[in-house]
Length: 117
Image (cartoon, rainbow, N blue to C red):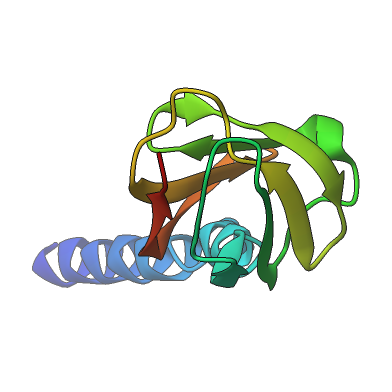
């Protein structure tokens, strides 16, 4: 009886280990790989209305799927490709990092955009 319980426990443990390593666990890694990233932007300073080009990866070529903010202020997206976004510095923007949301996935620049008044 004791051996049957041990074997049953072992089989249950083995089954749990096998099923917990399913392909579904890899989807979070896939989504990380497809997350947008910012490698830089130019210029790094400018007044309201300045056109800024953001360079990176995993952007959407469809500007409807792209939201850009300077800090918390929403910017107007002018043009997008898979590797660049062109936006206008919005009215009311302050010196801050640039935030991008592409198809629900977000990224924030490491550098700060300086708004000239």
